[in-house]
Image (cartoon, rainbow, N blue to C red; front, side):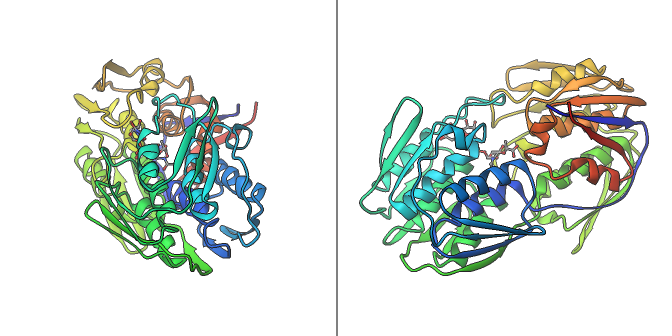
Length: 417
Ligand code: EPZ
């Protein structure tokens, strides 16, 4: 496991490009198996989870070719394979190959996605929903086996707007012989991105106010599609500027996807403005206003920005409370921040953060990718050298985060171990 070495204590100044969204690229790449044709996907982030997804596509017979940040997926010769845990590794998002394979091949065998540090991550909603679509699912020791004569179009009402379950349903429904309606669906920008991709290959998909309508088809076409910018990556750099101070410009960031993040960091004290080319952030890094924030499903404050927000609030002029309502165990970074001198108490789903005047450069460890980003942000505020262990977690979701921070004038470098 590598680590990031951070020499903090100075403000950020500079411009950095926001890459394509990890959580849009993964479902779109899975969807490339469906059209049995050519998929030219632009603005794909070069991150571990994307490479792992492409590896699974290749093992299933797809031809993959990279050209800069464009990945070309030819799925014309794709064939059914068992997606076992040797293939999925620790990548939980491989569970949405279930929906894509059931769509294309009317069968799937996918290894059980384990839980992770942030929660048990069950997939009961995925299973219940796909079963409503006529897919027979058998749970084995390590995997789920799925088969269907045909994918049955139906109306599905989700008990919780699960992102992954919504994506699995959309992917299967694209091959149904009729229209599938998903109610109480996830409505993240990444869901809209998948809808746009499915429409581009021939399965018209419309998202409106938590309801998704998928017009299944058996006639697909080739496509050329561009991945949306990563709203969580952009939010990460807003948070960094919010506590380190400075003036930065995030090229290609789409403020329309991050209204609540912009709202909260505006209240914290960041001056945020936007043009169609990106987002401009200015902050003194001082007089950070405490906040009470509850994470929630889109469009509420995203759980994937919670660790980054916590890092900023450790230096607020007062006490803040964060309520993590999406995952049951997503405060591991608090212990690491306390090692740096923060004053955070955890009680169930609530973190109480009493602002301190400064944090101390330390050696800390990340156990998930957003926690890792949050710890780098905290280290940027400290004089001296910090080491953030667990770089491989961070590389799963951030393309060259050290290079991006270097663009912004910060001294962050990767060190393999
Ligand atoms: C997606 O995970 C994202 N991952 C996560 O981003 C993100 O945090 C999450 O959505 C919420 O926005 C990708 O898109 C690859 P969920 P997913 O199904 O689909 C419970 C990151 O850092 N649940 O919406 O797994 C579940 O336990 C990652 O980029 C069930 O109970 O999220 C959790 O508490 C982390 N049963 C909540 O719903 C189910 O069948 C949200 O899960 C499914 C989910």
